[in-house]
Image 1 (cartoon, helix red, strand yellow):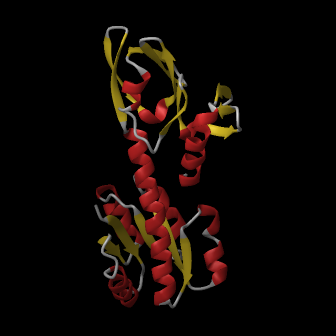
Image 2 (spheres, helix red, strand yellow):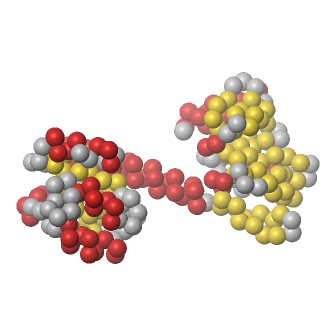
Length: 231
């Protein structure tokens, strides 16, 4: 899926120049461009914007104020007439800011930064929304993977611990482990599987999982070391 991009700049020639630069990126799609902030305000509710490229010095509505109009906060690249103007944008955490006239190499570097951030955000959102179906207390339940802190062995059952509740499920640890994504969950002990995104720290003997200490098997430490190298 291409990254939805919108450009706002009062200069028609700037529009054309930016459009040509955006065309070089196959994973970007310029869905709209505006020469007036008021035009953008009328259309913004119809747009799903992931990347906003805007002049910070727009008449009527300044570039930084345009961000407040978006349904979801997009990544942003600000353009300015001077470095002094560009500094106004820093507190809004833009991916980058560019001083006019726009240098094509600097623009392409800014786009690469934005694409990297957006793709990382997309992946994180996928993780946040991913879920697993379980049966606990005779009820079918859907559990978000990102909500799980750890899974603990209980004989012929496993206990799923989240920040809000515990669920006991009829399953072996091995069988349950096969249902979990390897990039997110790590077996640290014969009795524990943990969500590596929740790990604060670990040593040779235990793992600190948001304040809860869990045992770490000596034979499993290398798996955790490898997992942390990938994060």
